[in-house]
Length: 147
Image (cartoon, rainbow, N blue to C red; front, side):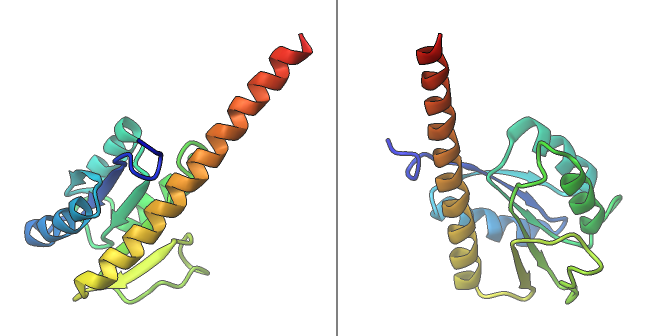
């Protein structure tokens, strides 16, 4: 199985059960595993446990909101580069005020919009991870050769 065909984990952070179920269905149809959180606090716990290739993040959440989740992710070296796709009714993608995201989809959304953007972001992350892993393997081989 190639890196591109290996199922990756996507974290859905959405407090509305119906929307979360719809997003789960879309991501699973793309061939990926899904973990779900209904609060920002739960999202932060799941990020650490599952290291998702993509986080689909609502902004209006109970407890800490999506912007705070995003700030915490970007401040953590381990997750600062994890792609985030906001899916929210909040029409405020201003990166001058908030940390940047890789995608922004307004509710109500078209499922094709979710499929296209999520599929592209996951593919980019998987390819980047494969290149990084191959580079790391090459560095280990060169290190062994030098010894």
